[in-house]
Image (cartoon, rainbow, N blue to C red; front, side):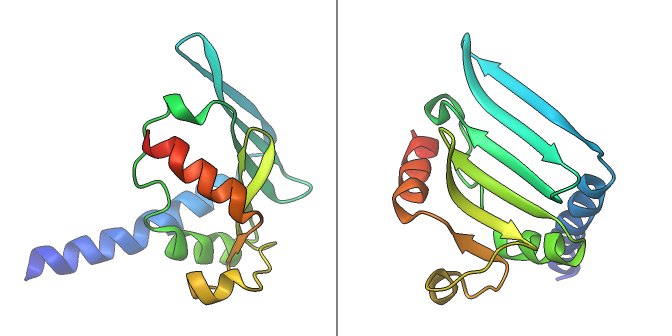
Length: 131
């Protein structure tokens, strides 16, 4: 029983620590190449309080449960005044955090901090990441 309590505490602390650590970054971009192809680009814009993750070639990235803790993480992003955008090949798919303004997606996610920008791109991204 104590192990479950410790795991729950860790699951709550990790999103908070990640959100706070992202807040201290001033800006910039990271390009990640895999298998000699551009796979991922992470851009941080401090002025916009936005972090964008662009899955340029998502099929070569193996992240089966990328958004497992998205609800807790997106809430922590909002609390820290940050926004995280997931893009698929340059097209917005999902927005988490402060600048997320869900409409119909709120019915699915049950969160004010997760916005599905494009159902089509979100589904495609999910499929690409499962490959």
